[in-house]
Length: 480
Image (tube, rainbow, N blue to C red):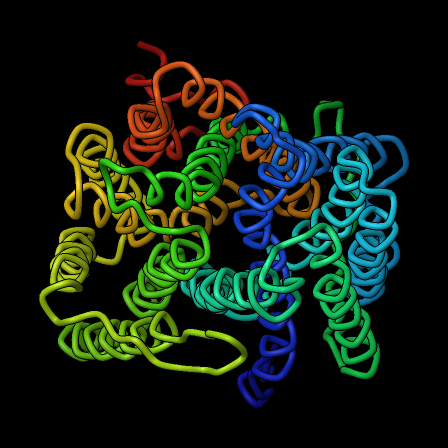
C-alpha cells in the first residue's frame, strides 16, 4: 500500500460480525436454562442432565475435527468458499437445529432434544471457526485481542439477556396454567430459529471484505499443529470453556441449595445475568485495556464508566418480574449488591496489574478464578453466592486472549488453527459431566472445586505456554 492509499474502513463489517457473536452467545447460554427444565421434566440425575452440554459441545469437537482433516486433505474450506458464504451456511444450520426442538417436544423424547442440540451446535461451531479469525483480521494485528474482546463483550450481552428471556418465556409466558411443560419449549425455539434465518439474510445482503491466503505446500503434514503455542492453546481453550460452561450449567442448582440462597428456579435463572453480565463487563473493559488508546488514564476512565453502565443494565434487567401476566420491577437493595461492586473493583485492579498485556492479564485472572471457586465451594450463604456469580468477571477475557495468543503467526494456517481451537470447545461437553458426577456424589456446592484445575492450567499458559515457538524451538524453561 502506498502512503496515498486510505486505510480500509472495517467498521460496518465488524458490526455485522458482532451480531453473530451476540446470537450464538444467546443460544449457548439457553442451555443453562434448559438443564434444570429438562432435569425436572424427565426426572434426570445431574449426570444425565449434563448430557445437554455433552451433546451441544460434543458437536464442536466432531465438526472441528472433520474441518481439520478436510483442510489437510483438500485445502481450507473457508479459503475456498469465503467467510461470507461459510457464515450464511452456518446460520441456516443453526436455524434448522432450533426448529428441531418442535418435533422433539411433540415426541417428548430426551434423545431427540440432544440430537437437536447437536445440530444447532454444528452451526454454531462453523460460525465460530469463521467469525473468530475474521473479527481478528478486520483491522490492525496489534489490536486483534481488543477487537475479539469487544466482540466477546457483545457475545456477553447475549449471554446476559438469555437467562432472563429464557426464564420468562419458559417459566412464565409459555407455561401452561403456571406449570412448565415440555410444550413450553416449542415457540421459544421457533423464535430463536427465525432470528438465525433473519441474520443469514442480513449477512447475505451485507458487504463483507474477502480475505484469502495462498495455500502453501509443506513437508510437515501436521499443518497448524506443528506450532507448539497453538497446541498449548488448544488445551487452554478446552480448560477455559469446560470451566465456564460447568460453572454456568450448575449455577441455578447452586443458588437453589438451602446452604446458599434457597432461591426458586425461576428467580435463580434471572440471577444468572450477574454471571454473564460480569463476563460482559470484563470483556468490554478488556477491549479498552488492550486497545491502542494512547492515554492510560483515559483507558481507566473509560473502563470504570463501562463497568458502572453495564452493572446498572444488569441491575435493572434482574429486577424484571412477570407475575400473573403483569410485569413488575423488584430491585435488590444497595447492600445486597455491594459484594458484586467489590468484585468489579477487584476486576479493575486485576486489569491495572495486567498492564494491557494479554498473557499477563490471563494468568492474573486465572489466579482470581481459583480464589473465587474456593470461596464458592467452602463458604456459604451470600458470600458463596456472589463468589460463584463473580467468576463471570474473571472468565471474561480468557477466550479472546487465549485465541489471539494461539493463532499468532500462523499465517496461511490461521483458519485451520481456528478450527482446532474451536474443536477444543469440547471441554464444555466433558467438564460439566465430571462436575455433574461430582455433584451427585459429594453435593452441588463441593462440586465447584472441580474446575479449579482448569484455571491452574490456564495460568500456566498465560505465564509460559503461549511463548513457545514453532516446531522444536522450545524455550529452556519449557524443555526443563
